[in-house]
Length: 450
Image (cartoon, rainbow, N blue to C red; front, side, top):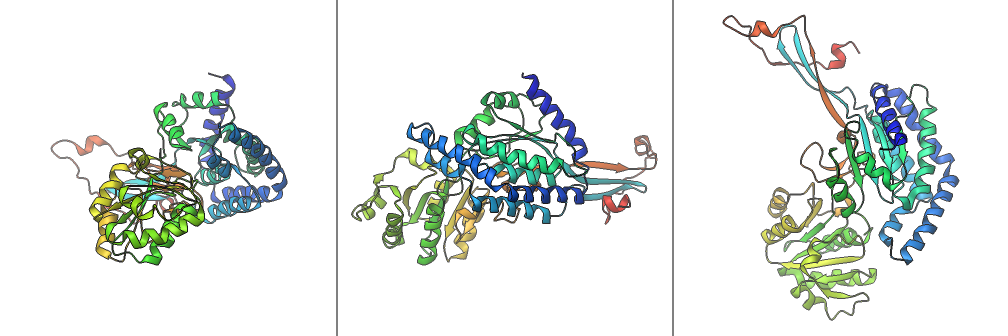
């Protein structure tokens, strides 16, 4: 274990303790400083990003990097505006630390409070997207969590520029502890981070299916994330044709290189010919490659597609393309669509387009995914769009946090018991005192006179 890595991790772990008790006003001043620093250092960020883009293009030509990752890598003024807007949105949120989740009187003079608190030290490991740094740093700061960042080598210059700008702004804010945020920069440091379960409380990976799976398989630290984004849209026999075209086009074409883009289109047989001809024209204009089951292939094969139209294989149903490639399957019932999604999907985001409320209800109840849409694009599955300000990641777990995760996924709770010298011995035996277990309409902050 590198002494340098362990030293930085221990420093961040130590800083997580005072960070947990920083007041809301100070945290918001630090966030404001972060946003202002990004705005005033645009040239430095874009210049650093240009170096990464030039290197990335060389890697694409040699087949060592995908075009999808290059798209995620780019930072321009619009992207910086989005970073700043995300930080300022986090400023508007109530401070989540110290909130009373429940309050219970165990007996007269004996009160139990369940209170929200930070998790502690978070490890964030991500590929390609430099905007992850301000997103997660702002959420971690507001929720009182220290953070270790490790970005991909393809974004090393961008990550370092953004990280240094943000940390300088934070540590220049009076009342903020130093050392709470650290950046790791080599591949070897990832493997060393994964061994530090004694110090790091949670790992959040952001990247490809293979990348996230590697993290999950190589650490004892709890991991919050999803390993694939195999998202579906099912167009029901009772679908409104215009809505179906709008949703299916947006879900695939608007930004195909992300985990909430549609990868498989399921269409009810009763409307398949009409719908596939219409959406096929739109996909053709956008240059989408189609991989079709036999029935959809027969409908679309003579449309003269600019891109390939191929026969789908079993592998296609479990593939996250992150590109302008789409699998298509015709089904004969909503039950068949639901079965296909639950069998082949990744429990990320799936949608139904229908005017039949009963079918929509059945779909939302039976599809086992972290986000389920009715007459809306899968692309809405996002922390910012869900009103969380920014997003630490999308989780397909069924414990702790699920779906697009904002600050709530960075919090846990503690129990605080307030007594008057109470003894367990008094509640045992023949003349034992009885517990009242009465709910209290009192917050812990009010109880402490805050």
